[in-house]
Amino acid sequence: MNTISTDNGSQDKNKHPFLSRIGSYITYEEIYGSSVSLNEIIDLVRSLPLKYWCLTASTSVLLLEYHEFEEEYQGVIFNRLFPKELLKKQIKIDGGKRVFFHRMQLLALLRLALLYSDTGKTDSVEDNEARKNITARCLLGISSLIHEKQVAEYRSDINMQLFWNKLTVNLRQQLTSPEKVYLMSFLSVYYHGMHDNFNHLIGRYKDMLLDIPKDTDFNPEGVSKDIFTNALMKTTNLTVEEYAALAFGILVYYFPESNLLKSFNNFPIDRNTYFSKTSLRDKDFIASLFDTFSLSVSDFRKANIDEGDKQESILDFKTFMLKPLISLEDSSNLYPCSIRYLQRLGSLEDALYWIAAGNEHRDDLRSYIGQVFEFYCRKICERIQSNAIIKPKFFPETDYGPVHSRRKTCDAILVYGNAAVLMEFKIKTLKLKRTIIDCDFDSLIEDINKAFIESNEKDKAAKQIDETIKALRNGSLHLSGIDPRTITNYFPIIVTFQNWPLGPFVYDLIRRMVNTSGLLRQPYCAPVEIWSCEELEYIEAVLTNDKISSLDIPTIIRDKLNSGYQSMNMYSFLWDKRHDMLQNNKYVTSKMDEMLEIITRQLGLTE
Image 1 (spheres, rainbow, N blue to C red):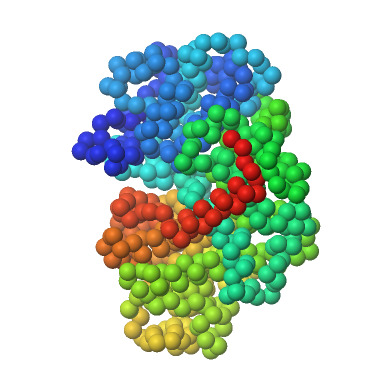
Image 2 (cartoon, helix red, strand yellow):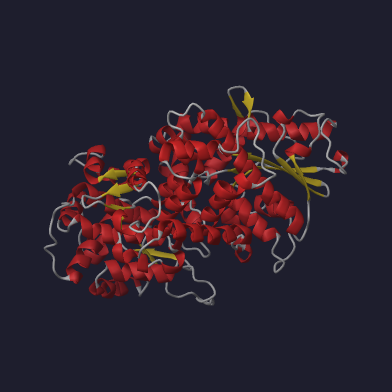
């Protein structure tokens, strides 16, 4: 377990609520005077009922989802899980630094509880301090077993993404092949570095689910505007508004940002109570939705390893990834793997595959979602053109003219003087089973090819951008009012529907694969950037903020590529180097407020 200094130096804690640095490592041995085995931790887990672990480890995991490096929330977890006497011992050992909790540690504890704690056991430990003693022993023991010391860092301004990127770097020397390096980077960032701004997530999907289909300018090619609505109604007997209210209503339960702690009083979620006042026409669908995304405790145990659990398997969260919700025997549910749950429940693409099961229009549904996403990103570019301090000239793909085949061009171009920013919008995601769960390196390579280079002889993102650059250079693509000879710098950006887990090694791997394919190698072309949809939303907020110095996209990319963050995601760069620039996107968060009104109206949620 790490500790964190309470001394923020010259920083004002009120102005900078994030923990200033990762401090020294406290071991189980230092606190208790002896080592601990996995079997001893399992015996401790068995001494308390499953319900206790659900109400402690699970709620703490949720607190850390968005507040991992905030002292206030770390303090809440410490007071909830650790006995007072441990603090006294810790002060003697480490000079009063605070214990640092992280999700890997708490998820490992929850996994052991789901595997070994007696679901029907009555709590025989009456004293709350005694329960905390058991919890502290388990958490410190788990930290010792997973070698947490390797990720201790003495540095300032560290954020969640950077923290787990450092984990990758520190473990690199222990890995025996490049494939393992890439997979460790991939997994460390996937499990611990991917997160969405909750306001952005709900606001984005409110726009994509409900508002864009009604927009008179949205005219999807080859499919009906009603294809998603009709398929959803056929599968669930719900309208799109009802589905959105239900899906995001569950997320609001888990992530009520303004009232986070209060919501845990009745955690795990009791579906019958929470949705008791819903006005949904088909109430049975609530149960089916939970069943789709959840796994019972008994099935969880069957899917996991048997009693001979080996030490290294503590970090095995495969069943959490397959079924992010765990159903308890009292019909309530707990929520151990928040990242994947957010993606599955809040993802249009996952909803697509679910509602399209057996639907003869499956390919059309996928095409529809892709066109919705392109339209959404195009609207962001239009707002940048209209509202940015430094205004670019924006050209959507539909404006490139009939001379050049649209099939091989990118989706959008923003021109800033002699610099052109070329964007391609992609909904292709990573395969859950082979890539993420099985950690198959060949599958990762296949996913990269299909998303960024080529698939079934069709050009993909990087190739489409490369073809666009060539067309501009040879004069076969015309931009109204632009002399292509004046454009001397090109900045390729691929914007993905969902976050890709981009650690340093994986980012370098993608760029190397693109270049090896002969793409984007021109001396006047910058290395390809891969942004999530949320990062594009943040960039819009930065460019339209008149309270900071004027910036444009080429300047931001140049600054990133010339820093130590060239192989990290854009969010990490903005966080560490331009923290003052990060803020919510006003347009997207306004949609969040609109969605909350729909949730309240449709579900009649109870406390």
